Each structure stands twice: as structure tokens, then as C-alpha cells.
Length: 147
Image 1 (cartoon, rainbow, N blue to C red):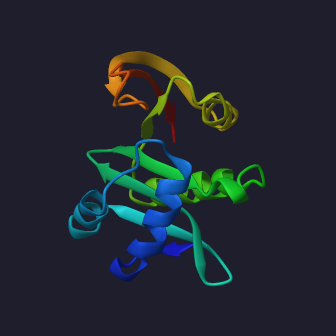
Image 2: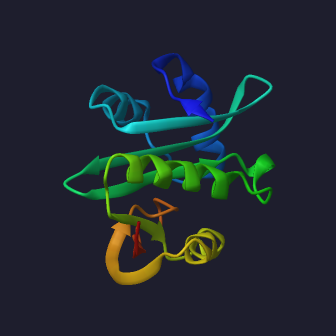
Image 3: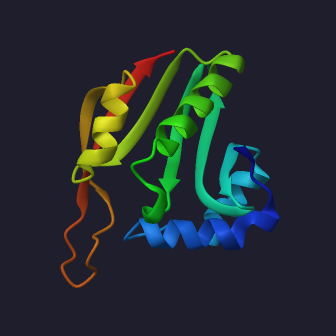
């Protein structure tokens, strides 16, 4: 795991597109780097296989994106990346961590619960529809934990 650089974006975008039905754009990642959010890359053989993005301010951290390439999921890398982000948040004196996750992403919800996150609410129609023809937006489960 290491800090993300702008030169990582082509590989980060490949991972993002492979893992998510509605991926972040390059512009979103560029904005996160520009405003100096905590952006990490997980590598294997010098190729990005995962990434995490977190903002920290006013005693809180928000996990904005945690992504592992589907070919590398189920090996503990998402947990390792999450733990590193939370450790960095503690170093920055955050005392609470927040995140949102698609209600259908049971695997991620299980990971977050196992790492001490609790459900604090539901954000109706938060995520864009996976199928644009369908048009139905998906709810987000809002979660938090003390640091």
C-alpha cells in the first residue's frame, strides 16, 4: 500500500471499472488528489489492484471509496486497506469514521460490520442505477464506528 499519484490514475480507473457497475470518473479521482484527500493504492507486481480514498476533517473521516479488483477479492486486501485508512485517520485525530455502501453489496457490509462499523441509517435512492434503462436508483446503507 502506498500513496496514490496522478500517474496511477490509468491503472486505478481499470480497477474501478472492473469492480463497480457505476465507477468513479477520472475527474473525481483528480479532484480527490487535488484537495489532498488520503488516496492509497494497493499494488501487486507494480500494478494497481485496489485503492482507497478518504477525507478527514473536523474530527471525522469519511471512507469515500474502497475498491479491490474482482480478481483479487476475498484475500483480505480490502480489510488491510480499510485498516490502513482508519489508522491514518486516527493519526489525523479523527474520532469517528463514516461510510456509505450499496445496500446490495452484502460482502462489503459484512467486512465493515466485522471491522466494527454499525448501520446508522439508510440513504434512499443514493446511488445511480446499475442499469440506466431501469432507472431505479439504489439505497445506501450509512455506517459509522468510533476510532
